Length: 218
Image 1 (cartoon, rainbow, N blue to C red):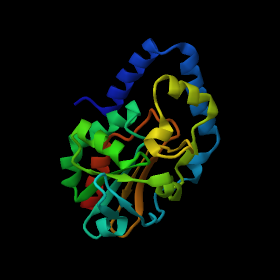
Image 2 (cartoon, rainbow, N blue to C red):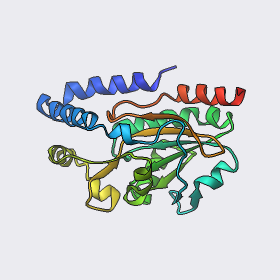
Image 3 (cartoon, one colour):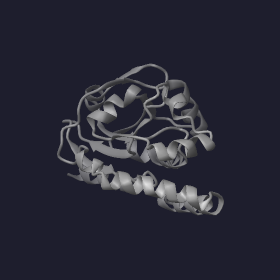
């Protein structure tokens, strides 16, 4: 099976071959600065209680975390937006394994600050069967300690690649969530976290399934 990490490595090779080195260096420096800031150390981790929230999905239907936990464990996947190639790779990889995730008595839910019409397009493009929740202003991502502001050094690069972050999010804050994956049990406890300031690294769907399997066995 072609893993998500393998697909990301393939994309990274294509990017290295096609993007000018000075732009790659600027991107790498921004990631390094975010890593050095210690932001990930302040995010919610395993053993923490997940904060309750109520967000609309891609069609405007309300989804409350406690309501979902009444029925099953929940896998929350925070992603930056449908404009992000790494997020698209991750969403597609999750869709390929969603039936196995659901077979472990868990519900997969994605959360993004991109506006509903954008997330609906993302959902349709990848044929996603799971909900994408609209986190307007990154309010829920803030509760999980994931929010950062895109540095000034990257904004002209994003603009050059026609990546209009304010246009996707409907504000001018340039705030984004660090990509993160949380597994939350029915009592609201986070039992596994994957938070990485390097947006090119994501949790493997197989690891999600393995950890859910351990919960079922327990």
